[in-house]
Length: 154
Image (tube, rainbow, N blue to C red):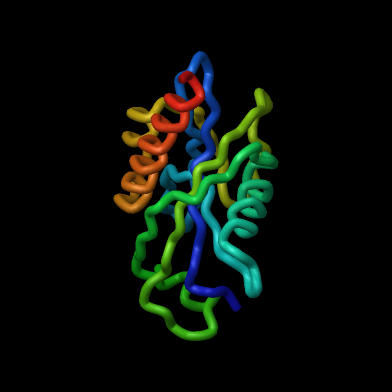
């Protein structure tokens, strides 16, 4: 059974110092929506290991740097996911990460979960995201990335 804990990983690559975020279109019981990489934390797995595993499983990417973002949020457990948990947890806690990607290759999508991808600037990514928690997480990622890029350019 799964823990009521997930990771959300926002992949970013920079082109001419401009960040592009990977958005994935999720096919979920007739409610398709855009998001970053997400997934559950397995038993005895750290958040970081879950983020690295989910990133690879959902995109085929390995990150050159994974940064945990200081943003954690909760959302109500979808009714169709209750069977995945040992107990009926009312909320799932999601921990946010930023993954720096150094690849020109397209992601390899698992068609069961995602069927489309786009590399987008921050504004377009925000337009695509459906869930408010995802939007706030991406905002935190983008703010941190600005700091990191400024440090690299000093």
